[in-house]
Image (tube, rainbow, N blue to C red):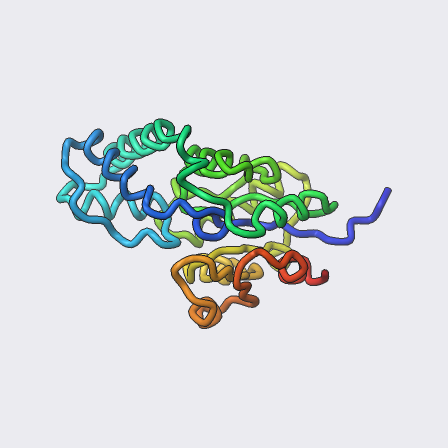
Length: 236
């Protein structure tokens, strides 16, 4: 049996790390709020790097609605429905970021590497966003840490790691867990767990801001596959 040379659990953020669907989320939330509560969408909180549970609670609060669990769940059902209605247009309205497909495919071909997600998105929306751009096939979406779990992004990481260990029958020590994302929230979640934090400066935050947040490595984007390999695997 061939020895496993690299042992990594690679956990990707979605928005502005792998894909760009800028502007669509506000429309989906507007439709969800109207359908779930009958209230017109007037303003929105900060979305960047935050979980769906945190964002939904803030949207409701900003519109004078108590963010109880029943209302949050109703919002999510309508949010998923809004995205599903838009599925046919997602390939035209969004784009895979440079190098994303190549990086996912490269790691998928490496023994000892498991890839999944730590994302603020709901599981259903994660699948739609990735599948529309052909980026879902190399990710194990069953074991991700999703934004329905907690308002605190750092809580998603141990959930994803435990699910990966259970499914794959192996341990992933913190130093073997690698988290890639475009916001300080991604970096902070990785550091909170003791994982390797890699910033990807393809969102609203600069390389300097990601470095200041504590990223172990910051990439300008994913287009240089050799640099991505080196950051994630520790070797080319």
